[in-house]
Image (tube, rainbow, N blue to C red; front, side, top):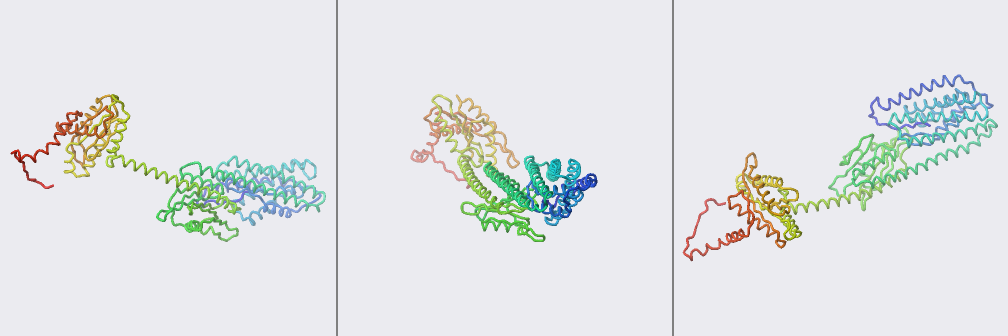
Length: 622
């Protein structure tokens, strides 16, 4: 098993994960050198009937390292090859030191010159290769007792040698992953260990068949080419099928994310994190286009690394042209990385290594796009299968986006409806209930009240001398006083009482029903005392009072307007008594009020009755 290089952010600290990996590489190389000197050098060459030169074995190692299968593990790509075949052949037909040399030379050419691995990963793989070869020689020689033969004990020794080498490879790769990203996930490590056991067993069995053929008649070795090729194809077919199964699981998980919350921004953030894991990518971005030209396009980006940009207006950056292209074409986009040295991929023009992108199609327009970029690992890039998978996710995301917009629109309509209702039933200055709400609530209480039962009571509050505040300090100061009055009224009431502003300097309070007027009188006294306290307005203390009229009924036939009128009449009676007073309505008050309103009709008849006529001249014209 080999570790395939993966690009890392350039801004990592010099003593971060890369430094730890270089240290681990040095330790691994020292252990391999010690194992070669201690376990390999003392071993004498085998006495087999066929002697294979080390350079031929190196060629087989090169071919084994070129034709490999890759399994991705936490962003790293582990390669499983047929390398156990040249190892087993070397144990039977090559000198021990030649086995290690052949492994190093073949792997160096394949990984360094053919795959062009980064120096850090190349150093790790070569050190691991030397250690595995040395361990295989030591185990095989120790269990077989030296020499080579076709005895079953030698077969067991070969199996033990390759299995130990494979286990060491799995542990070394898991250690590197832990140094980079922390503890590996147990589920994924289990898959790697499974392949790391099955592949060496199969390869070793096939290699022992080859050893038997060469031992008997080297001319028949070509017969082994067909099963070897078939085995390689079977490995790759298995990996493809496993990847298809994983893709279905990824797609199901994306569906679950899109259906799991009503918070659109949280859903999109979870989806982008999921896409990074799904495609083993370092960057994922979603762009949401506006429905009209006056609005701004929005984007959310996750990566590179741990960076997260929440939903924000799109800036004019190096990816602006790419976003515009997706919005205008409405077609998916695949830009793989360049395979040749010195060649620049199309994605690099946008500041990316490689990318796939799929539009979000709304009912009649492109509503946005999803972009995934910078595939992790140096041996793979995005392909048409990845693009098909992203298109499937984008279709689900488009539906979720449209549903989210619809839900947002419905929520906005509901919010506007609630705002309109609030405005229709509340005074905009004091946020108290207005006359409409007071009348409707009073009417409801009168409808449900029973004869002789609890009494609805209304307090009509009129501020004394409030006009002087407006005339001397201005209407803005008057509004401040009204707001302060409303707050004091609220503090005098309990839950269930309804304070309201009827207009101007007139307020009303609908008290929760009570068996009698005892509580209404108590609240009226409290309001009179509270409103007599000075108000601080523009640095000045303003003192005024309030006159309050109280009216109640236990007659279901009485209407809200009548009850409010009675409270109004009682308020004028209280004001006539000297202001800052309160009075309870009595029928006699209504007769006096009617008499006051009728009196102005008498003066026009005064000249005919010989009565004096009063004339006056205004002093100030208002």
